[in-house]
Each structure stands twice: as C-alpha cells, then as structure tokens.
Length: 113
Length: 113
Picture 1 (tube, rainbow over the protein chains, first blue to last red):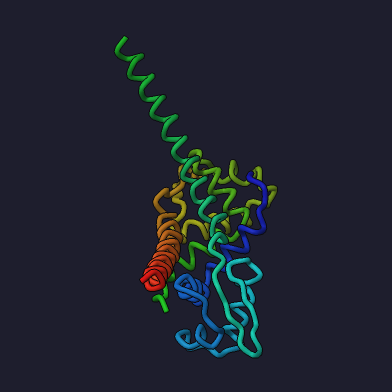
Picture 2: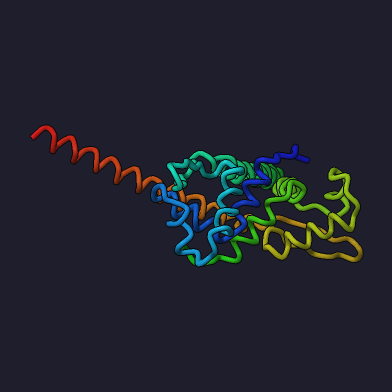
C-alpha cells in the first residue's frame, strides 16, 4: 500500500465541501475580504470564517489582516499535490495498458509463428 | 458562487481517506478480490468492505461477484471530474494573470507616451 499522506487527505477533505470549492474559485479571480466572500454563500459570517480557517490550515488560502478587515487570497501551488496524485493514478493505469498491449502482441506473434 | 456539484463533493470525500486512495492505486494495476485488497491494509474485512462500498457508490470502482468471491476493478474515467475541476481552477487563475499582464502593459504604454 502507498504510504499515508496526511496533507493529501486534508486537501481532499477541504475540497469535498461545495462552499469551500466555490470560495476557492472566487479567490482564483483575485483576493477578497471575508465579507465579500460570505455574501454569495448566503451563510452566516462565523460559518464562512470556519470554512476559511479550514482552508488556511490546509494551505489552500492565505489571509492577512488590515485593521478590522481580513483579506483572503489563493495559494495557487496548493493544488499541486492533488494534481500530482491524479497524474500518478493515470500513469499506473497507462503502464498497465502498455503491459496488456505487449502481452497481446506477444500472443499474436506466437500464433503467427 | 459556482453551482453545487454533489458528485464532485462525494468524489473528493471518497479520496480524502488514505486507505481508499491506496486501494484505488492498487486497482489501477489491475482487478483484485476483496481479500487481496484487504491484506496490505491490515484492516478487518468488514472495514475494507465499507470502504469499497463507498468507493462503488462514488463510481470510482465496479465490483462483480462469482460465487463467494467479489472482484473489484477501477473505473478509470471516474477521476475525470476531479481533473476537470482542478484544470478549471488553473484556467481561472491563468485568466487573472493575463488580465494583470495586460493592465501592466497598458500602464507602461501610458507612461512612455
């Protein structure tokens, strides 16, 4: 079995919530304040702040505070481990198909001898 | 906010568990029985079967039964929505960088007038 990767588990868990994914897509367009982000969700501010806190812990966003205003921005490379994992699965799958191809070819050669 | 995509939420939730990710990587190499899959996890069979059931519901794997033996195989295209979502985030981010580039260029042209 592949070794446990807690960061990847946290990333997938963070992305499993539609509100958090929507916030991430919004932040990909540019930084926004907590109030700006809360608006379209229809959720209460404390709920949105809990989502943002989870996203910051997962490394998906960064926040900074200026007086009473907290601004959030995306950490674009944060999704790289997810992309890498998906690519790895594809690579394992492709390698398997290559082995199957090679096997079928060798069977056909054997038959045509 | 982007529309809610329950299938995507379920996929991300299913992938948030390291045992389920390990099972998926194993199945990318080829079909396996439930007993084969359980071995390396060190988990009890009912626990592994619960994981497999969740993965089947999420559309990540397919299972078939021959007598008392249940065989699992991967559904390779099942990860496509996750890959697509990741690509979409990258596209939003790239579009933002293009707009920033265009803005800086127009500022420089303005300055050099």
